[in-house]
Amino acid sequence: MQLPHSLTWVGFDLDGTLINTAADICAAINTTLEHYQVGQVTVDDVQTWIGNGIDKATERALAKVGATHIDVSAAAAKVSAAYNQCVTDSSTLYVDAKATLQVLQQQGLKLLLVTNKNESHTHALVNALGIADYFDAIVCGDTLPQRKPDPAMLFSALNNLSLDISEGVYVGDSKNDVATARNAGCPVICVNYGYNHGLDIADANPDKIITRLGEVETLLAAR
Image (cartoon, rainbow, N blue to C red):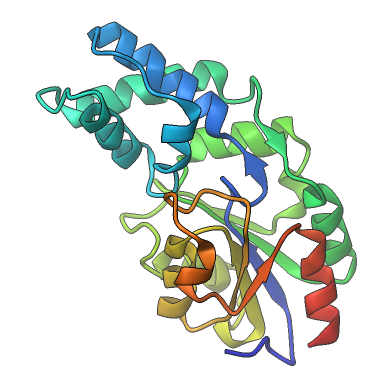
């Protein structure tokens, strides 16, 4: 799929695309596992679990430590509460993230944040890292009943701003993001440094692969 000639919006994933969040998510999971006295997981483990929401990450962590007898919903609630306490402790913006958002905003493009992360954690992060004001719409994992790769989240953001799916591109880091864009019917650009469940992002066949977010500007300018 080619990048649209007429461009009005750019959508972004959060974890693994704009922000490196794995260490803080790992800390929250390990706090919960310590509560249950069932072992610990590593940041490397957690990097392969991010992208499908906190419930799924918790389920994968419990399976990793052999604690599948523990109720996932109850454990996920504890992870979420623990994450509230450490969500901004060590998470950082990736290279070019803020500068890219600034340039795109200055070009008059509408910027969308569409993430499976919960609203409370998302807003805490984007406010703490100074990027909240760049987004015209933010749709999170608990905003709607659906989650990515269901395209409903992306369509919700577009509809709120009266934007057309054919006039934009989605930027992410995983096969989940590629599937979201494909299901919605728009091109997708993926970074090669994020959280893709331990897989090579090339295997997901995004339209473009970049090594840093600043390349988004170059790709859009050359379309």
